[in-house]
Length: 621
Image 1 (cartoon, rainbow, N blue to C red):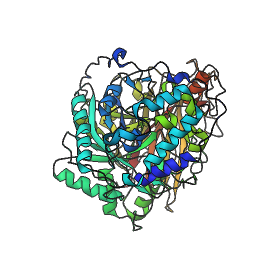
Image 2 (image 1 turned 90 degrees about the horizontal axis):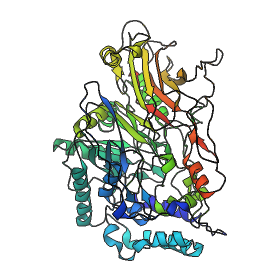
Image 3 (image 1 turned 90 degrees about the vertical axis):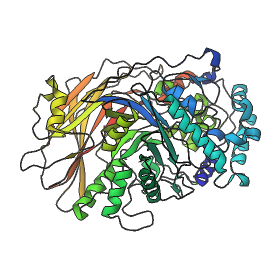
Image 4 (image 1 turned 30 degrees about the vertical axis):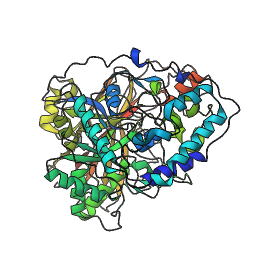
């Protein structure tokens, strides 16, 4: 992990420029005043529900205890992360106030296990100590800014900073993370998970996992990439912890920059995948993070040429000195699901049987998931609108890839109640979906006997569970008929209207080759699929780019469908998942451009979305 972070800095250093001017950045003002900061709003408990409620959270937040976060200007700790997640105001690393428009239901601080808390304990001579970042940003001196960046990089790569770090300091930092989660946890109101990030890298390829514990009991120190960069060794550590009563799961993230290694057809050592490997991977990694700041991992245009919505927040650039793109094959969730079906068809087991969530990977003790409140990932690299869009005196986004970063994502979990146990068990059974930051509600079921008007019934959800299975499940085979896919979506109350619901079908034919096809099963504004293409036309666009505004005069507040697969073959294994798209809205970069008084760079809009965990059908399965 440490080598990977050094590589990031080397890449960033190649983009240092001295601009001709350093305009005042409105992002920086006003300065954060802790004495006037509003506390988190009061929140009531959600009553337990047998048919489950949806809860939104972030399972990937870093604080100042992460090496990279601290070095790049973050000073907020794990305690601040939970204040932020609950809707309170905290200080950004550049000294201004940040807060969510609406509290989350759950969160986890997942600081890097490697060198945990070490820089925070060695603060004395760090370049960004004592408010240096804010002072330099406000003064706008390009020479001072560049010098500060170079000093930060020099400190980062100093020889005496190498190695595992002091176990006593790391143990103290880990205890602080556990204690912060314990203090913030309010069963029924807000769930705080104990967690950390295992930051395995193979060269420039990202293999990181977030480890989330079901309860409050945790090991003395996390198992880190300094112990091993092989995910199988992480699973063995979690298995041993489980025997000691510490149940956990690992959630891989950023498959998009794994250079094909996240869903590789071999083990990390080059050996064949086996049924035992598949069982262990499914046991310890039931979920995959599909949306976050460093790009979306659903699919790629080179893998899904017929998918008009495939090019969403694509960041395929590896963490390397060359800045080259990675191999899309084996780096995206849809491709992983297809490969899993191919394995099952050929060998009788599926090594890539998982559900999905979203999260942010925010490194400022925060979740920068709202486009109109985006505050970046690392203060020194992207902490102001001016830095992000290249008008300030630091590093150009075009060189570092900051302009390619999205605003993150959220995890959505259908659970009986908002407690650690209930949410964890729902994640284990994969009744989850990921969003790009929106809080739209999605239900997704498959069965054999759903009526066309299922969602018009008062007992629709009861019947959906009673007669079928929810997202993340396996649909049992039956002798005849085609599966009926039931999907329902409700807009984010604070967000944009809905464009459409799509069902994505993946299957393997008799020759063992996998395929994919996208079906528009519900659309707003009376649109229906074209008779020749089967596609629904564009929903339209109400975005005023210059003003960074949109209107909900198009789209729908709610959509639903019960769809019968017209091409079902009972002999072929297949997967179905739902993708729900909102109408176009301004991207974070468009809001930044408005604030800076400059033209917005492309893309100026996004279609926020949700992607569900898949339902799998296996012949005789």
